[in-house]
Image 1 (tube, helix red, strand yellow):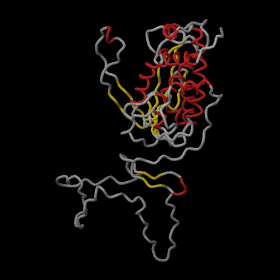
Image 2 (cartoon, rainbow, N blue to C red):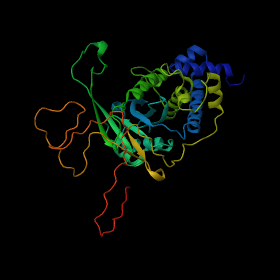
Image 3 (cartoon, rainbow, N blue to C red):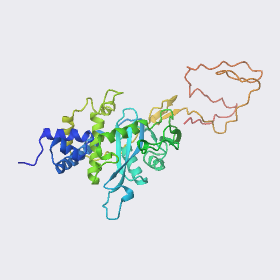
Image 4 (cartoon, helix red, strand yellow):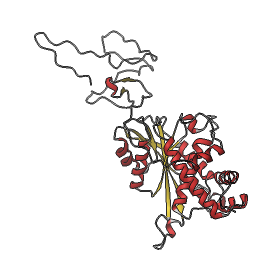
Length: 374
């Protein structure tokens, strides 16, 4: 008898793997040998990585959230010895999710260091066509990596969580983090809109992937024993999340929301695509178009970007505002100088004209100086 799985057997094995079962559990459910399942999972994960490289390119994602997911391969870092092969120990999965479509743009399995951060952000940069707003946690490696990949003109904000100490120490809460963290948002580069800066979607994605991939669970024997199998399992889970899992709040898959595909992929279609996928490497970086700001803005000529208003700043060299005497004016009222005619309060719905300023004429007998508004 040929040692080849039928299409129906492959579908059953793939469905069991994507439901978060371990190799031993899949073997009990399907009757397929563990070694055969491992070889199939490696081939399917490799094809899923090729499929993702072919589809996830030329994206116009404007809001990106990044985070790191802790896993391990073979042995945990604290028990790692010199005789263990390369790739064993803690494996940190760097993940970038589009905050609008919920699509996983990129992931990278490596160490939690600057080299992995640089490689991860370089791959994110290569898959985009629009300069995004990036939100990360407070890990120090993000700043240099994002600045190196996107330039220091990118809008980069951080959401830092300060966990409160204390809490219950019962067995039921042993691995539970403290409740009610204090969130602090701050700007690293550019002028990000901190009101839309969040890492909630990528953190929720981490929880979903731990349920989809049994190798990522804690305190169990389903962890990976080989680095190549670990990388293949990650590609298989993230690719199926983009193409086959419908988001309840959007009623579509992340790939549909990102305009990569126009339908929900069935498991049969997904299996055929990953098993027949041709070798495809990651995309090459291209020039990024400026992102249309959410606040009041005017487009600069020649496609050079936008001129926008940033709240909370003061003009360079501007004199301090005079302190009015007497009771404070009502909200929306404008204070005028003594003896001058009262000035009407501006309409809140009136759009600000950023180019309404015109220079005064030069004194008689002098030529006007050259004016360069940009």
